[in-house]
Length: 150
Image (cartoon, rainbow, N blue to C red):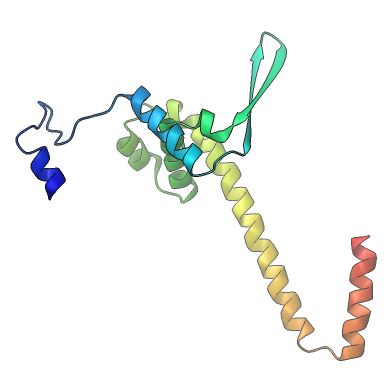
């Protein structure tokens, strides 16, 4: 309530109750929060200059931005089969073409998740079968799995 009182009567012309940060300031704050959160893992950015490939490595907190949240929202929404029309309206994309890179990412994500589902189905079948085996049969199964794995 104290925060609301502080900004009472200060609404902007477009109806915002709180001050609106610039994208640059928001990105600076996101980077600072990511650093504090320990997001130090390496991030490799790959790009091309002509035909020469360039790989630049930085800690994730140095390259994260507010656009990453937008990209994640679009990709995950599409992977969850939310219609592209709904996603476009939520993100104010002007055309399907501008969302095409996200659609490709969503399809890759979906393929990865389906593979996880398939793996879990196989695991479930194996566990069900293992529950019915004798100790000798389990020992044979272990030896067979060792052979397959090597």
